[in-house]
Amino acid sequence: MTDVVVIGAGQAGLSSAYHLRRAGFAPDTGYVVLDGDRAPGGAWQHRWPSLRMETVNGIFDLPGMAFEAPSPRERASEAVPRYFAQYEEHFQLAVHRPAAVQAVRYGPQERLLVETATETWAARAVINATGTWNKPFWPYYPGRETFRGRQLHAAAYPGPQEFAGKRVIVVGGGITAIGLLTELATAGATTTWVTRRPPVFRDQPFTREYGREVVAMVDARVRAGLVPQSVVGVTGLPVTEAIREAQRSGVLDRLPMFDRITPDGVAWDAATDVSGTDAGAPDAGTSPTPRNVEADVILWCTGWRAALDHLAPLHLRAPGGGITMDGTRVVLEPRLHLVGYGPSASTVGANRAGREAVRDIRRLLADRAAPALAA
Image (cartoon, rainbow, N blue to C red; front, side, top):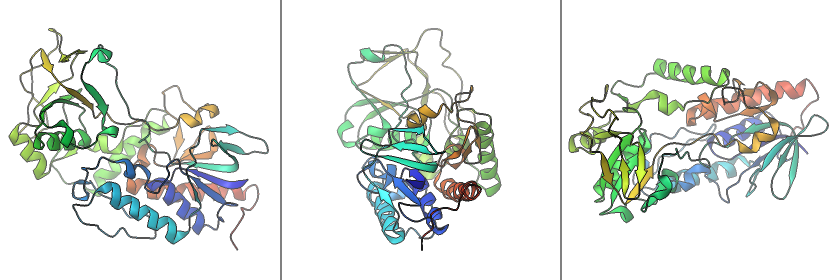
């Protein structure tokens, strides 16, 4: 029995735990954090080894404790988990691991039952902070099962070394695809970039006003019960000097999405329009497209989806495919908050959302009975 269960110990989960502790919820009796991993770090501990701190888009401090900048060359998969571990220890957060949540169900006495393989917690409220890393998205294209080479998602990318001398098709128009394209080409792979839509490059500064507009667009979707777009996806791709160099070298010359996968690569139908240029992409265009490209590897940089399968017993999905939200609160189940979902799916957004979720939960529980407070 506990007042609040937090599911996940990444940025969103730790932020929520911090605000619960500050609000007076005692460890275990007042709140617990259930983390499916064996060590601190959230999704960061699983990032590819070639991702260095100098190429990370940015890490925002967790509330109450600054992130001391490590060496730019240090692996992100080591630097960020170390920070998370120090944070858990400093604030004595009640993190239980490994404790992967399998299901959340309706329980007796106005409780939600949070089930792991070994135990069940009966909670008066739940903060879900499971992120997306455990649910990589693989779009289906005809012939995928016939490909004789190697297919993998960016979530399982091991670094560029083993792809030297290989022909690699990189699928996806986001920042992950661009980063991996660049390092694969540098490591000696022959790369082909394929995207469903022309990538949108943003050469203007990312102002606070623009940031609010982006968050508002994502928020409008989740309030309507639609599947959220990622905040990063809506903002467009920042034009850095590294991106300009990749454009000049031809690494970022893209091809439109292929129509099918063949045993030896990918192919486009004769009717597919492969002409035109990429609007908004400085120094970039659409390459003349052959009707087929041979490959040894297809690397899917096609994003992730919110890892919410464990919430299926609650039947929360709206007709639009998403979960209808009011801030962080689920409209159909006000005892449940989603942090790191939709407009809060960023490090800075997760911090704010954790605070908002705890504020709402305090109000909810105060209407029924006082929470179990620390002495």
